[in-house]
Image (cartoon, rainbow, N blue to C red):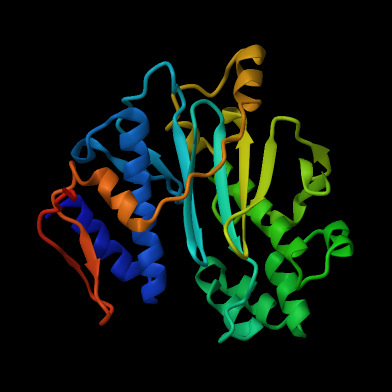
Length: 293
């Protein structure tokens, strides 16, 4: 059984909705395509695992001095799947669609995230009161942030996306105390963060639009701040100040847009088979992949 087909079986068990399965599968393809393009590792030699908290990492250890702490993070929401990587610093990425699906109520929209909360947390969310109260409980804004945004405009989503990018960079998982992560900005530029009221200059953040009706947040931070489980996957956790400063202030490169077909073609020379998603919600393995003439 190929590793691709093994992963198909995993997402069949993990995701109920076909759209979620598609996004998860494309996310996995992006991870392999990124590693293959950046590091030149053949597809069959790429080993991607997850920490106990769920953050993916490259196990191979085939990174050179140019990418001593090569790490990546992927996100999918709405119409997009994205991935970002860093050679030295931690990276976190989060996409958010600005619109609640038109066929869903606020309650239905929030319920789609129910698997990420404990029973107690979920009870608190659904019993919060009005739709806006439910959203407030779900997004877990600080008092200062709530005073700055209307819950149903994109300001709220911007805070949520930044919080998610920060937590994903750490490798902490959804259990992190998000209400104590407070962002400050000037028209969403020069974004900084305070944790439990303490400024954290070791971090940089970017927010940008992604296509129509989507936002993407990118977090970059010091490796020593990662969770212990994720820190073990990195080559270096400490650097001299000058080396780290250079890594922290590398330019934030714009995203490159690719269709699913283009991502698949990146792997065509390596992948012997790819999954096909049928309309009956079944995922099957196809035969050999041929590059177009």
